[in-house]
Image: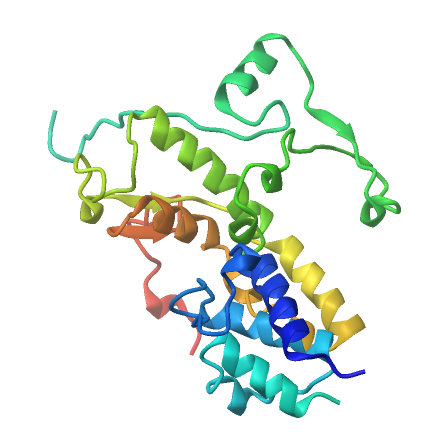
Length: 82
Length: 182
């Protein structure tokens, strides 16, 4: 069953917490992965792979550069999840 | 004393060893005659002919912040823990530059490593075989490179002059290239 927007944000928050140590409550849709959440380009690859697995979605490398904020990633996953 | 006969001054000591998680507990263990050698109980060691080793007394994952620890091989974790202790032991409270007593451009990190991050290499090879290429950590190369301990200590302490794994002086004389076969 497809994840809801709230579930995706919560899932991304858990992933970012695991990888970057940011408290889950700080991971909000308007937050930038690199500027606000301490996710560098290598860690972003980890976030993407973890999100692909969790939400059963493929996020090609060419699309990753467009995912600046948690909201961008949430919208992408909502649209593309199987 | 001439200008090439320089004196080395030890200003701080740090350690994490099979006897203890810092220099003081290691020294105490040495004086007490304790052995740091213990049985290797990990699965990967099951078929080794010798299954004893000097294993670290305090797991670095218990000391370092988790997001930092997960991006470092054990070799760099050990180096970082020992270097931070030595830095504090020398009386510094912040990284070079932030602690005004140290000019970052006059500070270097020189830490030798026998192999580098070999456990990372082996672990990620298993990931590659079992889970596929996309699951291999993007941190694999910065974790396994032999200069990772020096590089990460350099970043942590603000050493801008040099970060290198080389621990011996450059050879003074090289063999003439003419002796090579052509």
